[in-house]
Image (cartoon, rainbow, N blue to C red; front, side, top):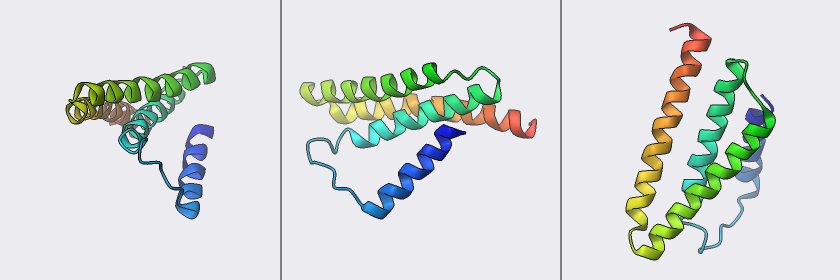
Amino acid sequence: MIAVLGLVLGVVVGVLTRPVVPTGVEPYLPIAVVAALDAVFGGLRAMLDGMFDDKVFVVSFLSNVTVAALIVFLGDKLGVGAQLSTGVVVVLGIRIFSNAAAIRRHVFGA
């Protein structure tokens, strides 16, 4: 629950302060957000399953964001950044929807 509250607080602070993203980082921000959402949904699912571990969550969060950003960076250097970005979003999107389905089944029993 702390992670969800932190996410909500971060979104509110971001909307109120409207930070400027440096142009060199712009291609990586959407991928980092999707990777972070994957970790948050995975953490919420683990919490509902009674298996949540804060250390695992932090490592998962940081490694997801780092690996996703590195894949997109490598794709940019190879000239296929858009294709690798799409691949990362598809893979993480599948994981997010899988975790969302497990959360829904746990909460609503359906």
